[in-house]
Amino acid sequence: MSDAQLHAETRLFRSYWDDGLLDLLCGMSLLAVGLGWWQDVVVLSAAGPAVMVTLWAPLRRRIVEPRAGYVEFSQARQIHTRTGLRATFLLCVCTLLLGVGAFFYLRETGNTEPLGGFGHVLAGIPAVLLAVGAVVTARITAARRFAAYAMVLLLAGVVTAVMHWRPEVPMLVSGTGVSLSGLVLVVRFLRASADFASDLDE
Image (cartoon, rainbow, N blue to C red; front, side):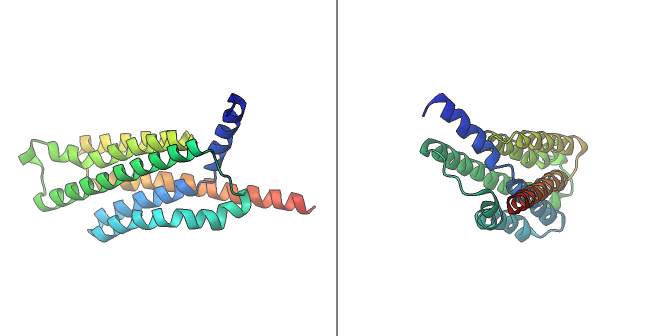
């Protein structure tokens, strides 16, 4: 593939993720985890992200592809994307397990003094790990806004550890922000596709 073709594919690949659907589902996953931990419904925190993962492909086929079309990228890019997404998914699973452990520890003990304050640090670690996942996603998708999401997650995790908050706080805060961002992008995408379709009909 020539440099010009590679540059064109990179630009097309970046626009491929601009519909906001991935953002919306990621944000809703964070909210599901946060709400599950907040309301002591561990099933919600475990099942919520899994449901969002399974919804992405059918929703993209139903909502995005009829309006934006289907694009097949080079094999090298597809392999890179699959590998990165699997690594991110594994990181998220590990983060969920760590968060569940922190959640149960803080709920059962009520304080973190036996660990010399490490328990409060533990409450902020899930958000920090998810920030790493957001950075990986930004590199995979070339969507720079995921780097901004990573900063929000990192800041929320650090503040949670410093302020001795519970682990669901950074999930709820960052989940709300990412969900709203994704919703705005989805609405913008739908409006733009509707305007484009009406222009073609004229």
